Length: 182
Image (tube, rainbow, N blue to C red):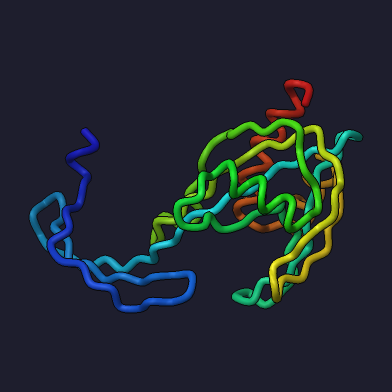
């Protein structure tokens, strides 16, 4: 049944080659045989980490994001480097951004934040048994680390203070983790 909905690529050309993003414009054949143009962004993928402190609070960051030009409350996250296993990305990002290492890691799932115009995927990880060893931010990276209970994080969602899509999706997984007794 899904094959009936598939579009086939007839021609593809890269129209922008950025540091992070690559933009393509493709000519495609639609399921009804007609042709259309599709523009999309190729993204290397990323991870997001639900990091639970021994007291049950979760590690969050406050970080300025240039596109919307505001500070966001979000879970630690970062881009997957070429050839890097996703588990290593999660370990690296948690350590670099928050200064925490974890005794146990679990891959929970995958989310696709922008399916209308990007191939980006974000791998969701759970980190437990945290210990603080010191942050090591990338050049030009500025953020503030904070911790919130699940209840406080959800209150921030309902007040419109937490609107980051990857964090919202990961909070669904966090609710399940806490319901099962983190």
